[in-house]
Image (tube, rainbow, N blue to C red; front, side, top):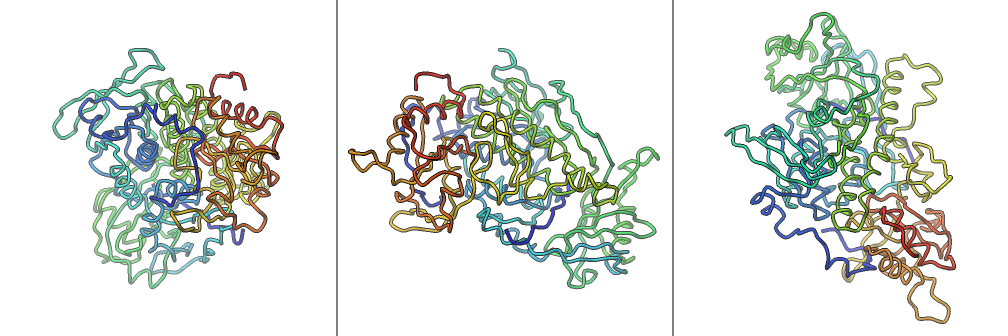
Length: 591
């Protein structure tokens, strides 16, 4: 795997790939009208999904839903995306998901200026003495486990990219609009009827949606309305982020910081961050309500003085953009689903910022939920599939909360030896999390696994394998992961070489896929090596996935393995039919 990537810290048309549909007829019955999705939602106030909250998690959910052809309306009470950096680091799994919807390139371009932000130090001030400093290693070569990278980029720069992509994809985005109430007149599992108010004009409109997705933050009004409790270690600290403009070129003196902790007479344990322009920064510090301190104490004058103290220049020209109070907390909702309402991101879990897991975990929530909603809407999955959102994502969120807490203890020097041993590698948390509820019967999966050790077990992320993808008349380099996310239908990956004895040249798994899709009444895509895919790996794709050359692997649209067969069973179509039904929560029938 090369060098371990650095731990992150939070502040608040692809080429074709040789896939074929094993059941094309299902498309003709597709109930999702994508041609005029935006217009239909705007004219009738009816949509498939109402998303409440326009931060990175809600915007990602809108983008993923539209990628799958699902109509959605997003409402956000603020007039624009966040001006505060909030999260500033993104792990490869998040980039893989953005890659699947064609946005990774724009994100990498925006992040290029942060490539050298690798200095981690404790200083008296930027112009003062460095108490200690280290250069974090450049992110190691992760090409063995992912086609994507780990990057630094403020959330204030990430959100507009995702917003633009969601808007371009046809999502209806209503910033400056606030959810004031919602009801479910047909019962908890029934459609949602919501009232939304324009904050400028006061005009109200009603929106009817089959589902509501709450991405409305840690104080989620939707979650509170539903009476869903939160459990965990609670609020650990109260913080404020002071966002400011100032020319930091001179004080930085050529340095580029990943984390810069300030320790002087006025500031203890404060963190100063800066962007790639060197003219915009964030000062994060703690306040103590038990001592009577409040966010209102951070007036413009005091904020300017604190920034000057952190920089070490009493005459620095400082323009305070805003002061954002927030809680460093470890909390998870007791359930992520309540009938037709789902919680994602901070509405579902508030993760301590150490490790940079929170925003990444929220994007992963959105992706897990989006393909399931699309599959149910298309009639290709049973309603029970939606229960798997809570069964899969809540345990991951709870375990991630604990990992962030352990990293906080380690960083503060309070961890004992057992806690140090229990602290997982950041890539295992973000790229190697597993879904034991989706594992084979009797299998025991660890919650986190080294991504280099992933081997195609059901319930784990499908391993990356370098391949050549067919793009018209030419082949282009890519990843086997590129095959999975383009459609809310599973993919059967097979070697393409095993044929029926005495039959034609059609691979047995291609024949089995067509029959299984027919029996299950779903679409199933196939990806056969030699028929649009060429393996560029040294070991061979089948070894990476734990099957023989004549085996096959069923992969979900989110890139997690649903089932695998080491070789060709006597009744391949029957075995695959059963696997499809289980993966999509379809009612059992004759195989």
